[in-house]
Length: 304
Length: 304
DNA sequence: TTGTATGCGTTATCAG
DNA sequence: CTGATAACGCATACAA
Image 1: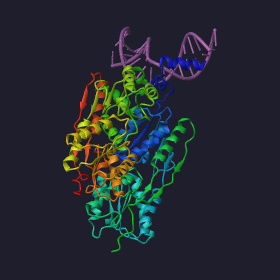
Image 2: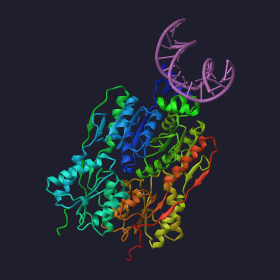
Image 3: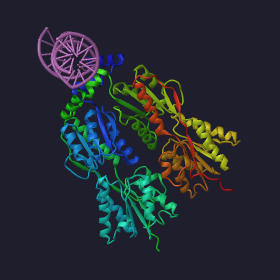
């Protein structure tokens, strides 16, 4: 009997009207992904993971890139209110925004946070340990024998930038190495910002023998800057990235980097969302493991 | 008076219910973007352009990556029917799928095609001239003095792959250069497929003095393959890419490539969609200009 | 300007 | 299992 109905549905090519269903069940079957101009490779990984989990489900993904979460809270909140989303995935730095989270909670919209650094326990999240990861990356350079290490920071509005700097400094402090302020350059997670920062670092006298960039895009830029100066990587300059995005294998030499399982994180966060949409209780803060991927952009410093 | 209502709306934090609005005016305010596992850089550009045009508009973008348009037409058509989209942006190879287009037309859903190669006139589109572009790229190599040129093809399910090969062959034929079948290798637009193809080309005896890859990801892979063989780019091997995606400036040396204005194309296609949604008549097939970007991955062949 | 009826396509409920 | 009815929140049309 049910089957007969199904058959008729197929025969008449009938598909239920989503708007009408949504009206009566107050469901839109839309899940939003909020992010703020991060590196292209990061967005791609994020979407891949989220979409992978969504495959076969009825929900669809709406991409909501925002200019600046902190500057335009109002605007973004209005956006979310009017967008009729069933759930929201918050990528950094939106995942650290208290006003946004309060709004979602007030509106009864489930959300999951990716890589939050503050306000833990305020909402289910999945993250990695940025401090420990940066520490490992720096230790790798120290073990190779580097003592003059330059750092290219990420976008200051992403709290991960600070966390990674803290980890780096801890590793250096433990090794008894001083990190002069001149060796810390500001970047924005983009290739161009990394290029400018790396040029400034290499113009120092003496230049660093290693550069630790807070993501792979900027690390790739550091390799380019080195080439511009006639330096060889890794013989004259070691470069460490962060994220293990596609770019780390596309450049030459392939980057030594920290594998941040962005795709897995997005998958897991989306999984949390789906569970919550089924009425199950909120989960807590989940940590996924990182991993130091040693490739060919790092080596001992020249003995000079 | 209107203003008083607006005030009240703000005061009560009232937002109209999208589902209810959608029900009565049969509008979901959703626009779908259909694409099929292309290179990450391409998707990013595509989304950037589409979202840029959507900024400030009421419509939102739903991403619909599909496994294989040709293999699962039924499934995808069902997806579109049940998704209640107001309009659809078709990226290749979906932009060449007749069944999909017929379905959308039957359903009264406006659509715009990006880089279609067949069935022109069947729906508004925006594209570039792949044949002429590939021809220019090949001519550039010929002018430099290359006569043994390897080609790495893109995904055979994308018609652009054939168009680009045709352009390449035309340029070589005009120059009186024979393109031996052994010099044409299959790829899939991905870095890994390009790496395998480039290794096969470089293993030939004699190897080509230049490689023309049908996108930048595979061109980057060709550079990596050259490095593995101890070859210098561009001294020992010239490499030309296609697309001018981010990757072309991230690798070293920066790629000589064809600038395909993907972002502009997506912007323009989205613009067409918005016009159609306002009831204006369909536009025709628009062409955007390409440009040969000569950077540092090409040079005359070694005189040996 | 304000009020009131109707319909959009679906789900849920209750009677038969 | 079938049939009828209300309700979801809004837009439209009409009357007051």
